[in-house]
Image 1 (cartoon, rainbow, N blue to C red):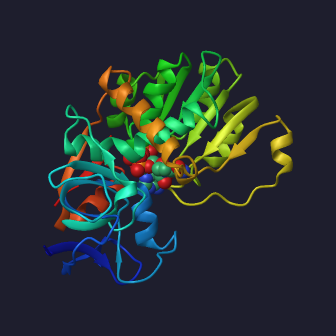
Image 2: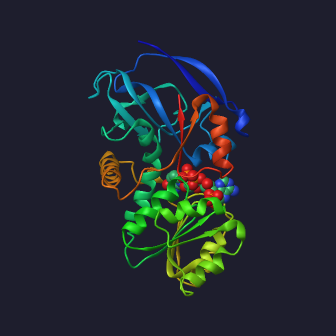
Image 3: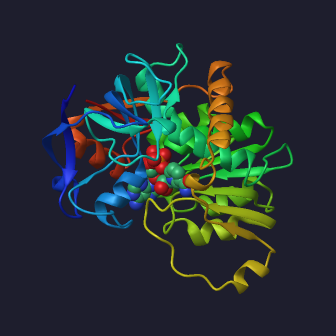
Length: 325
Ligand code: NDP
C-alpha cells in the first residue's frame, strides 16, 4: 500500500505565509515503521520557533510539527502494532501531514476514553508540565508558584498540577479575557501583564516574600521581573521564550538571593522509553481521575495551519490548538 500524503511545508524561514500544502506519495513502511493516517495534530509554540528560524530546521523543504495522533494503516515487519491501532507520538518532526511514516518504537497506545483530538491536545504539553512539577523540582505544599501564560497550553497544566500538589499558585496572563480561565485552573490570583504592574501586585500578594518556583515560558518580556519575583533560594524554570530570548545575564545576580535558573527541554526527560511510559501513564491517570481537566481546544484544518500559527502567535488562544487533516 502507498498513501498520497498532504503535507504543510516551508522552503524558508519567515511568517505564517511561508507555509503551503504539497502532496507526496509515501512508500511502504520499512521494518520497524508504521504508516499512519493522522486524525489530529498537536500545535506547539516550538513549531513557531522553527518556522521563524529561532530554532534551526535540519533542511528545507521542512514539514513542521512534532506531535500527532492517528490510525495505523500498515505496520512494517517486526512491530507489535496492527492495522487499525490508534497511536500518538511526540517529538518526531513532520507531523503537519495527513499521513506519515513513524518509527514504531516512538508510538504510544491510547486509552479508549481519550479521543484523538484530546490526545493531540494533551501529550506534549502535559508531559512538559509533568517533568516540571515532578522531576526538575518536586512541587509541594511548601511552594509558592508563579505560572506565566497561565491560561496557555503548558500553563493550564502547570496551574492545575501545582495546585493539586498543595502549592499556593499565582498566574499571569496577557489580557483580562484570559483571567477567568486561569482562575478556574486553581490560581489564587491572576495578574494581567498588559497592565504593567504584575510584579508589585504579586509581591504584595505574597507579603513581599516572592515565589519559591516560577515557570516562565514567556522569556524576554518577563525574565528579569521573574528573577525579581523569586524568593530567597527560589527557582526560575526558564522553559520557553514565546516573547523572544532574554538578554544574557550576569551570573552574579543569582547570588543576591541564592536563586537557581534552569533552562530545561522535555526531550531530555522522555528520551528513554521507560521514562516516557512512566510519564504518559501518570498524565493519563491524572486526566482520567480529574486531577487535570481536559484543555479547551481550538481546531483548525491542517491546510489552514497558517491561521493556527497566527492565532497562537497572536496570543488569542487558551488551552491547546489542534490541526485536523
Ligand atoms: P501557549 O499556549 O502557552 O502560548 C504561548 C503564550 O505565551 C501565549 O498564549 C501568551 O499568553 C504568552 N506570550 C507572552 N508574550 C508573548 C508573545 N510576545 N508572543 C506570543 N505569546 C506570548 O504555548 P505552548 O503551551 O505551546 O508553549 C508554552 C511555552 O512552553 C512556550 O514558551 C514553549 O516554547 C514552551 N515549551 C517548552 C518545553 C520545554 O520542555 N522546554 C516543551 C513545550 C513547550 P498570554 O497572552 O496570556 O501572556
